Length: 378
Ligand code: FDA
Image (cartoon, rainbow, N blue to C red; front, side):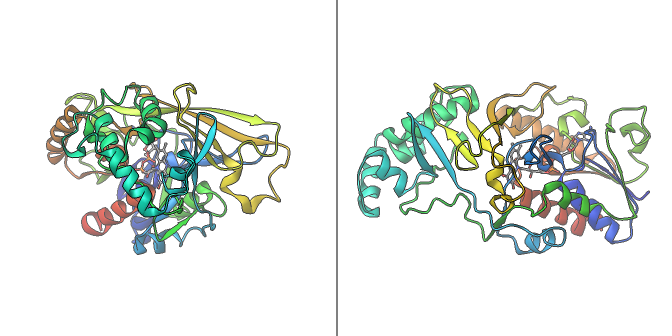
């Protein structure tokens, strides 16, 4: 074996695929019982509807190298992501745009009129000197829109009122002065035609790649464990960086999500793939309805049933799935100490979301893995 890869998320799979294509013999281990990391999806058994087990995954990129690379393994549908939000029993389009503003203020403002209105409402605080997330948000979009669309939603995400959250949590709040409610601005967007798992299985379908599932790097009863591997061969590690060092520099903080999945006996529950719930009176942040990610599968999906997942957000404990880095000043100091520790680890390459303590979209994880392969490992 020439290379051990810990973690079969898109970072690990990209390195594995490149290494095998270059003639290296690779073993990929993952402690889960499936490949794909958080991008994994599966057919819900009762309905056959593809469900994203770790939260909705929408592929989008403006990186031509990444787009060319991913198209070697899958074609993409023409799905375009749009999100709506329910506030006080009324549904509005997101991100906040001219449609949201005109609906909220029951008006027909032109772009310039809306711009002037929001600027006058935002003059309450200067976002540059804001003392909290609340002040910064009001300084960016004004109090009425903040209170309707940001305040309670953010409080649910962080289990903390925005007036108690540091201003740095947000740098900007996009407001579009057009009716464009396309969620992503990237050149390419779509979903893998036969699902995420089929895409990722094709990446490792190579005689030089050996995949071992339900195999934890820290389990010393299995042959590819940390003690046995380090110093013996190059290792690409995409698990949590603090766990690698046995939390010696302290625990990094993460937010996690809980999903409550249901099969409903209706053909269509909400008419769209993602509906946010902006108000404190609803405990979940959003509801996903998976069949809407694939309108082109209408002839294959049931017309009398649908699968939804309500999403709840909270701080993660060590046993939970780490999803989003919290990234407090304390976390950043710990991360620096882990980066120091990494320097002395012989031939261990830390990558991916967990290995670098960074939120990475899929295209970013793939780009970063291609860089690691081209510039370090190859
Ligand atoms: P990833 O977390 O996928 O994989 C790491 C793997 O390492 C896991 O399979 C884990 O089991 C394994 N591992 C960890 N410790 C181990 C150990 N000790 N031994 C063995 N294996 C171990 N992106 C995007 O482009 N569009 C989107 O819409 C979304 N949506 C989204 C929603 C949510 C809720 C999250 C959390 C993330 C997204 N993403 C996203 C981001 C996307 O999931 C991310 O880019 C990829 O997961 C990154 O791949 P990685 O390989 O870095 O990590």
